[in-house]
Length: 257
Image 1 (cartoon, rainbow, N blue to C red):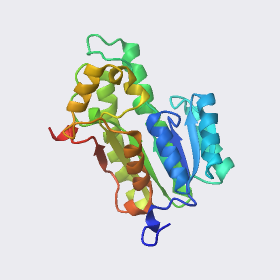
Image 2: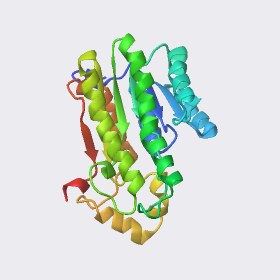
Image 3: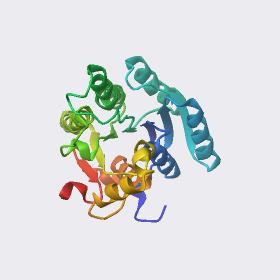
């Protein structure tokens, strides 16, 4: 570590990353492990999880995988227990698991569409916060980052359920940050714009749609997963020690239009 930048070092931290094999989760797990954190990769995809763990460990990092459905309270409780039994603690988390459950207006959405979005994108984060914070309260605090979206800061056409869930993440983040600010637990959110991840693959594979997404950002381009990972790594580090309740847009200026 270069002298003067020690606060960015994550050595000694144990961190959970949900949705850990996807675009944002994968890059964040790799970056935080490279900066010294022991990383629990939580996801549904066992094969992708094993591959990522092997990649991190081969590069000198420290990672382990636990299969987790964030809509299951039992799974989330077990995920935190796995972090404790595997690495001996938990003091950081990136609650990132999420879905894009189609593009539908309110009229076009079924109750099942609505409920699936809320279950994964909002209730999943609630459950992660609940069990992560339970441990952190007993063991000196920690830092948590939740994934929202620019759809959590603005209106979003043809995405009623998704937009509602992501707005909910913003409110949940702010309320939780207030509740635990005096107890050494920081809770923030990251709001990505259009990022080149598997979730956007269908749109980005179409040249016309790709150009439209890029033009939607004042920077004129699509974001990359490492740009979100760097923000998350900063937020869980001591360099962000006075930051809580923040909802940080990483969107190439999208929400400034």
